[in-house]
Amino acid sequence: MPDTPPSLSPQDALLAVMIAVSASDENMRTAELVAIQRTVNHMPVFANYDADRMRVVAQTVFDLFEEEDGLEALFGLIRDALPERLNETAYALACDVATADGSLREVELRMLEEVREELNIDRLHAAAIEWGARVRHMRP
Image (cartoon, rainbow, N blue to C red):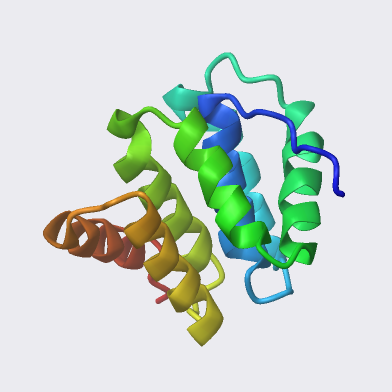
């Protein structure tokens, strides 16, 4: 029986969503990692976050990805830790990470869809969030 994953803070949950989207295609690209690091360093929601937790959260995500029902367990942890008012924030951060490298792969799109459904993001709000991420990460 696997160890029980650690409980997450709201910031841990936001970070877990970003890591999960980046790792969904089994290739965490440099641009995605830079986007995650920049988000943690500069977003107000992470103002008092202990950056040393990033390694623990990342390992939790990776460990759960190895489990048969790990994605379901991961979303359970995220939903338990994340106040509903931060669900759209989580989706926006996920979209920023997914678009950071300039391309969206099919598996990343499926993961974003899963995040959208698991966090109960309104479809119209999701479209606006996706559009914002796309235009922020446009290349010349």
